[in-house]
Each structure stands twice: as C-alpha cells, then as structure tokens.
Length: 82
View (cartoon, rainbow, N blue to C red):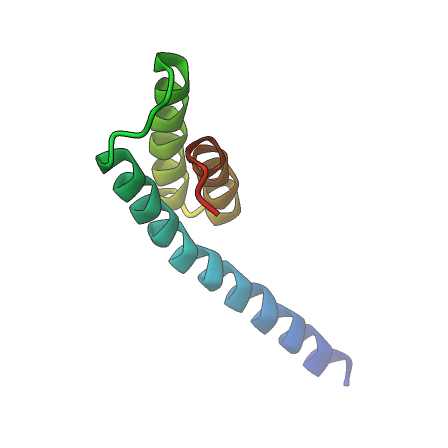
C-alpha cells in the first residue's frame, strides 16, 4: 500500500513537470507575438521583457520549467498578456 502511494505521488510529480514543459513554449510564442506588434513600452520595459524572454527560454532548455514559467510570466505581465 505504501509503495503504491509513492508511485502515485511520483507519477503526479512527473506529469506536472511535463505540463510546465509544454507551457513554456506557449508563453514564449505569446511574448514573441506581442513583441511583433511593436507594443508601446519604454526602453527600460522593452529591455526587461527581452531579458525575461531570454532567461525564460534558457531555464526551459535547462529543464527548469517552473523557473521558466515564472520568468516568462514577468514578461507577459509587462506586455499585458493574460
């Protein structure tokens, strides 16, 4: 019984990691599409968005999907993406 509980917990943990992995590219695409529309941002905001976008992609490629999602969310917030 205890072993099956551990197996279920492990399966859920792996499934949630996979969900974040698929979420990152969607967020990056949304950011790229918003940037292509030349949003009205200050130079500082644009710099932040580009940095968060690059850092989010790097975290995604490194397998740090929660970090990627969190970082990309900062860029999306500046761009007003929900």
